[in-house]
Length: 592
Ligand code: ARG
Image (cartoon, rainbow, N blue to C red; front, side, top):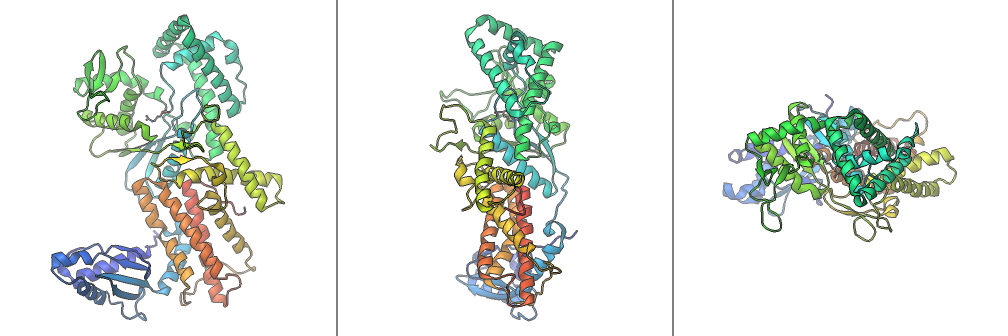
């Protein structure tokens, strides 16, 4: 494998070795290498050894520095300088040659030298999860965008990922919808062959609103709708066919949104609640037999000592309602069994709104008690915060309705068209459309992914499509600018040849070290499941590039060797930004 060891890891190894040699009684010690203001890095890990070793920390640091054998910059490949500072830290400066070699190595290696390791683990990820016959709301948007980024990042690092779009495609509301569909055949026949997503959802919304209206005002209809639920449960062919129509129609809409967003989800990933319907009775019986669930007031419930309602009474997870119906929780329990036993999950991620935290806590705990979730399998609720309107309240239209996702995305693309056209007044319309799409969708995704997952954020399109600040456009622009520098290369010059003997400017150094930190950032992102860590690092790279480009002329560099080294840095920056944006699911056009 052409893995390139990050410089910090090489430094870490050298320091560990030096500590072990100089202070054998300290055992294996983490040198705690981190970026520093005073040098490239500092090591903080020696100071805490002073107390257990009953020694002066500065003296310990001096001993380790000596053992590091870095006092001769002429012979040391990695470290140019090591100084004791403060109460007992080491300030470490890397050799310019080591940094240039690192740039060359990453450029030459596939995947920038970042390893993928197949741990044999299987991660099932449950995300997007819109509901049939209903608008997708901004919560589904967040789940879709975050889930998609996590899938891309995990797959890149070698994890086997199984995508599950847990569609809300089952439940008593289908009795009402299907019954109304039968009673209003014109609503049904209206579905044309090649319907757009917008037309599909508008038809479904009409159906939903009218059906609900009738349901709320006509008791005889309520009774017919209830019987329709029984037909659906019993698998009556005519009823099932109508249900399937609703599902197919909704998928036209969902797929339109997914396609606009450019996410990886396909129809193959759609495993809706209906899929688990045949497993619910058996699961409920099993839970009862194991004593995990008990009858209470006719309902089948799982109780928890520490979960109580506002009145102080225990607030159970309801597996089966008093009327015999199974609901959301039963489905999630059956889904866990299926995911562990059949899909072989070693980890299940649920990318769902923070408001469902209690639900998942109860479901996971019940599944543990029942043995559906063995200790070897992790279940994680990957929570996220709300999307707020400009007034800081949950995002709604002025009329108080929930915002239509398609129009929101269309508006983002329209705004982006302005930004792009402002930069390139002469762009051909087709190209303008394509770039507006890449920029507009990238802006929406980046705004979401660059915000701490659990935080709420304000949906502000003006800010999102701005060229200034921490935005998707800024990053796409930084990438495109570098591509344009590389396009200007005289024929026959190629970006990549590096002379490690060239002295390094501070801005070159800062940029190169940021680029070399990407693998560590990817590790942190997979460990925390927080894409904003990757987004923030890409922003830092773009900023470091700006400083570099302002202070270090590239095509007009004083010597050919300096120019070539700078070109290599440009190339690596562009490749790194492209990889990072890919992992976030954001396009990186060559021109903006
Ligand atoms: N469809 C649900 C909703 O819109 C979210 C489903 C989350 N996933 C799950 N396995 N419960 O709220």
